[in-house]
Length: 414
Image (cartoon, rainbow, N blue to C red; front, top):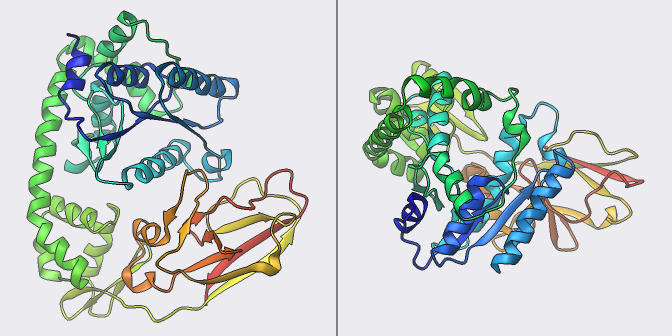
């Protein structure tokens, strides 16, 4: 039995509802075929980023043909070019965010829903060195998890050479993404230049890296357990003794902010707050944390007034983000637009995503604190939510390059 088949069989797939992210490259095509050979019937997700013209379309076509041949359901999502090419946006980071939102939508459907990804040992080692290069600590150097938060990666212990061998032995067709050869991306520099040179001198580099990262991930779990009670208390009571924070190690501080749904830079903000006087406050995303009576506390906000502004323009801007909404005036009657605070049953059909999401889940995932969440506004047209300002854009009535009259909508806190 091949090492690929063995890796697939090691995972308990029973009662799982699987979605395979398939780009058309060798890694994901091998994953798809190996799952089917193991008796699975996953659905397929392909994202066409529309960045490589005919090459992107050819990738999509291969995935479509493969799905038809295997008798599998395929979901094709075309990422709007504006999403990845907005001014000041990192293309690769934007693409990852787009994918992750699609993954999360699938995983959130039930406890059985899982996304299967084809990351392999070469990817792990690249990630380790990238994180080391960026000065990451324990949580960065541990690499990707074989299974976490509904994401399964069965190939993390296998080198890419094993996947290529499986593809060749089983006559699997795949496509090469030529952008992987570009030196414009730091990962490609490690992949194509630095790591091959290191492996030539140290053939055990990948296996040694795998063992080290596994040990680091085990240590991550220990640190999370050490801060679990404080995270639980913070989420429930929105307060933490400053002394407790100052007694945390640097890794425990990271575990705490990650567990609280905050980014890593929050550690520096809370360190500054701990050294400041009573009454000092810091902003972490949309959350205000205040130092008060030797505790960190979330500052409860008063009810806010939201002011929506609508103006008509003639040309859709080249770059836009979720803080402005552009609607086609030929499709949307501005007199029927209304806004209000969200309600428990509200759902939004988000741009670039299939199906709909509860607004309550969207606000929670966006890190909006409970103290601000209940008053958050939504823009509505004929009972459909078009916009959660700054967070999500709906699919209905959006302007495009062919729109002759465009409604530009902005929203500000009063």
